[in-house]
Length: 463
Image 1: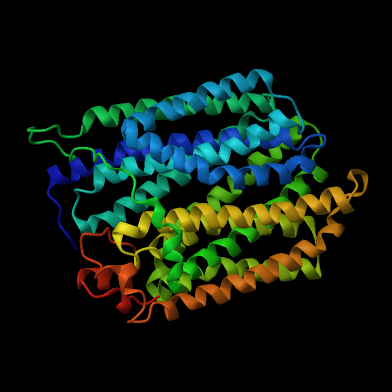
Image 2 (image 1 turned 90 degrees about the vertical axis):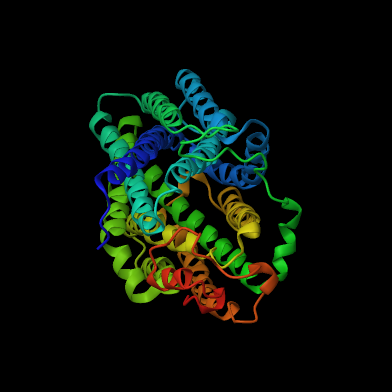
């Protein structure tokens, strides 16, 4: 047991407080905004425009990420962290006035923008946490990051709970406005954190943070060069398989919502109930299941939990295609992905040397995932507009999606099993550029932690 002086404990709590509160408020805003967006969009004919929204997200994801990185390099991360949510809050306030139920160009653009822009805001807010806690002792980092993740999940639960309580009293568009208010509160917390923990300027002493680096972007010309390494290619394929599964499961769930709810208030209540369940499941898994799994089966075993669970659920749906089964599959996918899977997936990038880790993440989580989502969306678009008429759409017509989910999950499992093989001792030494060092944040996996502390080569990590 590590004893920490009282003054250090207080300082640590201060550093965790600001990013935790910001993540809590931003996640609550995200869930409230999504609840209002979904309740509006899936009235009338919105479902038939959903594949176009998926295609738009896939097309714009990488340009949005690149533009954010370019703006960050030019103006600095802290100004972007403030200006972006203020702009989004203003857009949501305007959209509250002009929103109409159903699909269409304006509604589809708004549907696309929420995951794209909120994804960037979450990334910058998580980096805010990294700025504040990176000077803490290494043995405390895994605990601190766990608290940040838990705060984000509590925020999701808070947002869903507020939506549930107000669903019968407010219109669906009102939740988009409430989400904008939540963003303003998050900005206020971030500003307080920036003031409390400023960057050092030249010649200053005694501050907590180093000066903000002037070079924020690595050489993105190297992105595709990393594909010559087996390990990177496997990560690309794993991300693609997971993205296809995610789009198909989410689409089935939205079809279920469209067919089983009538009216804006019923739709709002439906989505509020869903987000309560999925965030509660994620929080419980994060707190109780993930530490046990990482201790018992390590990173690679934990990375298999999500695809194995979804494969089982898809096979059950193929046998008995029920609405409850599709809702349960969506809850399992959302809960496991945001808790057990996300934490272990981030650790799968640790074998890659620090200079190339960011470009590989852009390739894997940005480009590969979005291309796969675009392919799945194109398939759904052809099916909806070529083989299905709106008047005849029903759950029984989607049995082929369950088989496709099962096949994609099987490929996902096989690819995760390849990760250990691709990490052989003589694998991609140029990619690793030496050994992992104890300067890296400690993940929760005991096997990776041991490797980091002993400064062993990456080939000794037990995936």
